[in-house]
Amino acid sequence: MPTMPERIPADGDSAAPIGRLDVEMVALSFVDNAGITRVKTVPIGRLAHAARFGVGVSPCFETFTFDDLMSVGRYLGGPDGDLRLIPDLGALTELACQPGWAWAPADKYTQDGTRFVACQRGYAARQAEAAREAGLRLSMAFETEWALGAADAPGFTPALDGPGYGIIRLGQVGDYARELVAVLQQQGLSVDQFHPEYALAQLELSIAPNDPVAAADDAVLLRHTIRQVSADYGWRAMFAPCITPDGAGSGAHLHLSIHNDQGSLFAGGSGPYGIHDTGAAFLAGILRELPALVAVGAGNPASFLRLQPSRWAGIWQCWGRETREAALRFVTGVRGTEEWAANAEVKCFDATGNPYLIAGSVLAAGLAGVAEELRLPPEITGDPATFGAEAGISRLPMGPAEAADRLAESAVLARAMGPELHDALLTVRRAEAEHYREASPEELVEVTRWRF
Image 1 (cartoon, rainbow, N blue to C red):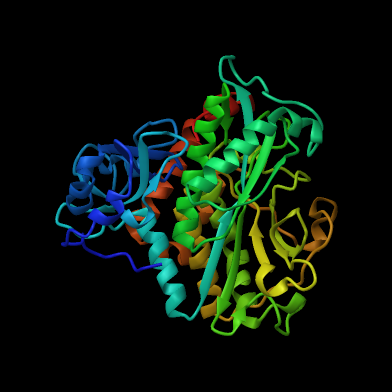
Image 2 (image 1 turned 120 degrees about the vertical axis):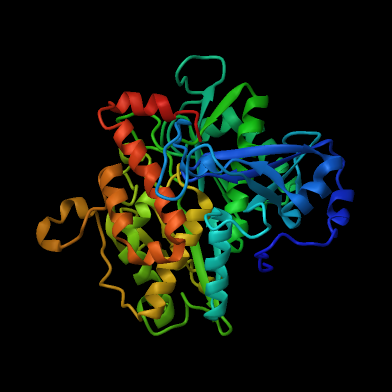
């Protein structure tokens, strides 16, 4: 991945990728700190101009909550100022899911041409660059879970039924799944797997890993594509973390692998399951920062309806091989595939988290672990809910205010984000926590159902 410039590029080299498109309009997206994907659009004839001078957008969105209420932080928020959205033409994609349109993720710059200090995509790029400078190459991919509801029904009416993982469900969505995979592949996303999931009307799809920034781009494009294809079938795709207050929810687990010049740091080493010391230190850094990472990747009030014991949601601050109750799950792959298949999964995240902030923060946490030469504690097996207090396994934050406090206390993430971005994210999470402090589980499900 090329290093993103700190100033708006001054040349006009945008004609080549634009000329390949047969579209009329282009959507330029960014994801705010509440996890909402926002968009500005331009006609195709204005895309080169947008790539040179940007499209205006208010910085007020830095402190918008997920329900579009404006909060004001120490540095950001309020009605003043303007930013420029600069499309990344290297990621420009013609949308097979929305004919006549293309899409590009955008970076935020100031009006004087310098990168906006709180740009979330820029934050992920900085951390990826820090990893490269440390001799590490990260690959990431988000799992995507969603529930399908009837578009013309109030509330949530399941669009499919049948046993979790059951072929009965597949029979009801077979044409939909085939078309979705075909459209995604037309858009350059390589699909690894699709299957019916466990929760009510739930499906899951996995795509191939990418570099950290591109993995976050892929998550944005994937969710938009799912929404569009679902609409074509008269359905709505629900990515919110809780489908029903008393049932399993939808996550957005992050998978990651680490390589250096010699190969995978998760295979062929002297540590548990072949983990090298540097790989173990990276995982130990993530493990240490997990309480703060919850506020980044699952800090919405509704997230904590999903983060419940014994639901495989990863609510415990521990790790283990193929241990689905641990927040950090290590996956070796089957014999003979370890060198390319071994990876780690952070299970506590969901689609209310900004994928760029998640990627950047996991990188920052892991790099701090490497710099400090942290060691992994012993792994766990089984369900920590049955262990008892003597096991010393901590539960991750149980509510949005607690998660925000853990983020406020994280020197690692505060340093990586910088004061403006760190404070803006805290402002959003604390505003959401306060606004929905007395909300019932049913109210939280209702207000978040179609927001993500």
